[in-house]
Length: 562
Image (cartoon, rainbow, N blue to C red; front, side, top):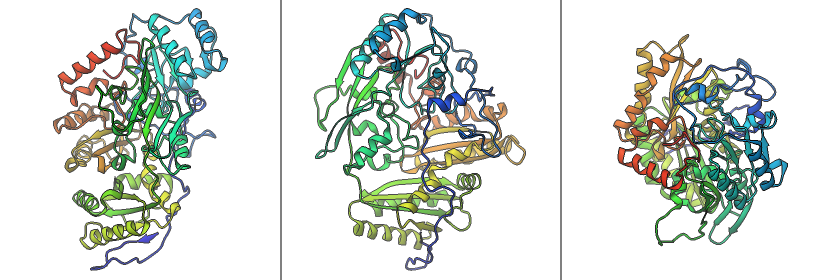
């Protein structure tokens, strides 16, 4: 690992020192229904805010040191007592189960608890954060678009509510039932349909796991234009349905741009055959955009066509310490100027998030001393010499200009993974002390960190922050290049006084600055009631009209989104 300390007027590489860590790979979330079942065996006190909550979780072998066993997940209906089951929806009968068994033709395609108790349902009823838990008695696992179509037509005709479910790695309760809705899992639809190695256009089933899609493309010199911590579990269809953002958005843009077409099934069983393989198609309304980020409320995505970029062979990763958020902004501006087209990531981490990551994980940070802010940058290109020259010029400039206080640059793939772990490993450590309230927000970049400062001050003013107090720390990190802040309030447990300080203040603050209350996590159930802070009354009305048009019976993922 090369050091890039300031040595005016020229940059000098003064030391080589690896990061000392107990693990050497970025964090990848892999969740299975079996894990969820293990986690639902005890009782849990719940947070009642809309914030994502991630209590400290045990490993499959037992509780981590200093942690308590994972408590039983509270039913969503108990956490949200104002929710009422829609009386239009029918309850499942044995006749319904027989129909689905005959239709899908495999015992493995139906998981039911109508005629018998079935613990296998638990993993489909609960989300991986243990915040939401439904009461579904039926999970269907079709293996083709035609089967999905027949399932949806039958459900629509018989007024049976349905929740589409991918890898179930969402953060806002959008992928699990609220009451007794049927869970429609696409995990058996997981094949590559086609790949054009000339154009890079990739077509796959919606149930394909993101990491598998990415590995398939990498073997052919391409990569998937999306990368997430949950890539080992999340499905491509679920990524598209939630318009997932992730770590590659700065370079490759959002899924609204890279997705060329979708195949979807409407609530009445109609198959929307819009699986285009064309980059240009200016022949009418772009209907696929309604399903990208629609969170399964208009239909079920069954196939995806996406433009995969060429994999870059020249990759550089650097990690900096900075003295102020003003310098972080200056560094971002200079990175865009000096690195241009090869800049693929610019990740912001405050000192609090890095200190907590280091102390909880037992990982030594790569820089000596502590800094108020840290930045990780990545470049990806095709010419190592060309990229190295650009990166070195950038590093020399920001160091000699005293924008950056200290830094290191990875020398190989293993060291790149070590540096990325300092960013990706934050999430798993923040809930160590008992709980964490998480907000995923879009804010104008110049004001991106102001909310963290104000929230910390509010907690201090209320006497809630500090040793022996409910709040351990208020930290911020996120995708600086996308204007996406992850505000996190790490706590020693769920606390009503903390929650009163959080909401609705966070959403009011964001709304006043024309930001978004959900940058990449979606609305689901937890943010449904707050969409008015980011959307006007006119926009909400149009969204509801679209919902009524495509799903007049309201059977698709009810109680959520709008």
